[in-house]
Image 1 (cartoon, helix red, strand yellow):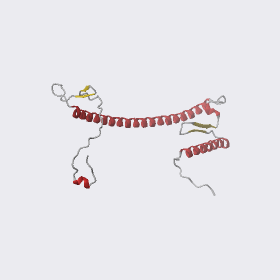
Image 2: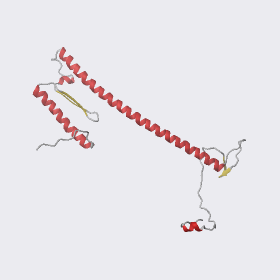
Image 3: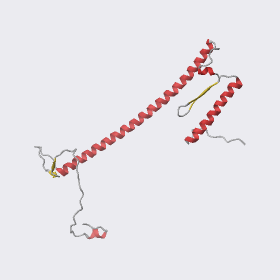
Image 4: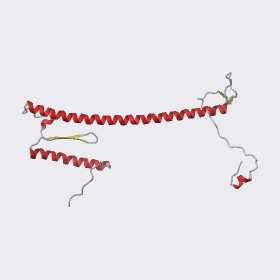
Length: 192
């Protein structure tokens, strides 16, 4: 009983994908060698892994630029055109990969730019809120430039500079004797 057919699609698991690549690459190179020997054919195979590593096989060492002394000019021209076609294919693939990478980086750059713009808007909103809070706490200047209210902390007066950090301290509220409304007590609330 033979092995069942598998669906030909990308393998999701990276370890399984690498193992399958290695086994099938070796099988393909073996078949290329057998075809060259059995049929006296010139076979050339180039395989690029997902990491860009090159695996190749050429039935004659002439594809690598060696043992060219016995070839005629026509043979050399044929070899040259084969190599140029192969090189053109490799360059096209490389250019496509680089273009895809550039597009992906451009897309990521645009996303980062949009995020930066949103953060910039949030920072400006917070600055506006801080300015409004500062004005509420320390007062505003009148038309003559004098402060309506001047607050002194730690012996230093604070003007209306919005870039000066505001230091606030929380203190425990003093207990007041107020009558607790009956409705609040029914809800289980206690007011101090």
